[in-house]
Image (cartoon, rainbow, N blue to C red):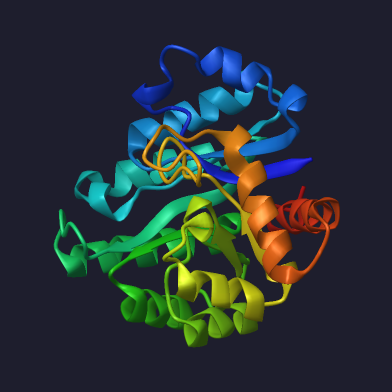
Length: 254
């Protein structure tokens, strides 16, 4: 079975076939999906999806692009969502300097607050970092340092940073990008980092692997990611799949 550690099935891209996809996970060799909140609406809908589908779990957090909504009331609602039985992480939280939709210091402030929430709730974190690799690492070092564990979603940093995250006990989220021919750095990271620190993710509806690149992504396409990781590691697909699934269970304490 395959574990999708980061999905966005609350996205409108799934309005036409969400029930069909989430109702047929087992038949498609998908053991579990963690639907990750990005906006406050997304966090609420992630919790609702986890209540509706037995194989769907939730993460509650506010993406750096959306932290303009943050205040004490929003933090209190996130705290309530974190107490739900099937909420397994705080996320996705972090820094995004690509779009700069919110001031960088505001992003940092609310990233720190949500890292503290994870420690308060004793939940792992699901971390977003885009064009902000050094600042993300520095904030995590100073404010979390592996204290409740977590995953660096859609890892895109250097090999040196990958090794530092693993040293602190974090997992690296590997998705469709690893199948791209030009993803040489990521392939090298997958080769170097012990398989026990990697987990599979879609970030669906985004980042579909080859041969679906540019199309809508969903959890069924993770088989291509597992195949690529197995090939890089010199393992059978079945063995890689088993280890990656166990890693995700350990990440989310399931």
